[in-house]
Image (cartoon, rainbow, N blue to C red; front, side, top):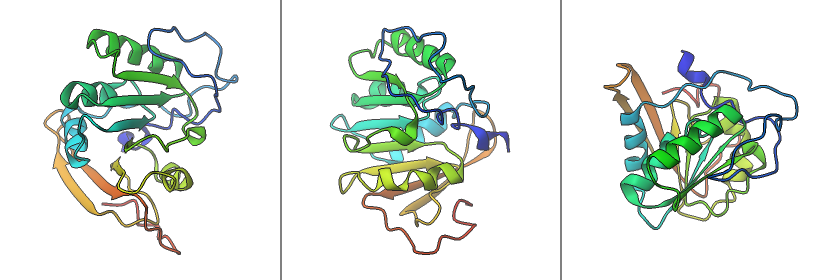
Length: 201
């Protein structure tokens, strides 16, 4: 159950981008600390998410609540696509920058310290999520601005009120527990009356 608290690190408003190669300042979070503890997506689940989205080198991938940058780095290394991560936590941003440098994908990957609810998603063709159900639902207006055909992959919790095109259950060899992946394609078909079970597998 602790996996459900993953990407809630991205709630505090922040407008100044922080890109690869820059060091985050010590106090640029508006005085707030992350709302929950970050838990990373297992590496085999990351790969399956990217495969489910059918990522290619022509895509632009946005990871909302990128943590240590493992999804954006993997996307760049496996598929050669542009990838941008967003997170509010300066520790996670530092880890992302180190990960990007270590994997030598600086030409393809950037990380910005931002509130995910203020990010313009329109340049993205793929969006990856590991957020709580209420956060996924709150992102619907932004996700509705994606270009038709853009893909969204949510890990463990779907987008409440939206029926996924595909749902996959996989047992991770890394942590030994089941994970649930939900694929959506823009434009989202939002139901008028979401049910409380929409985020359940």
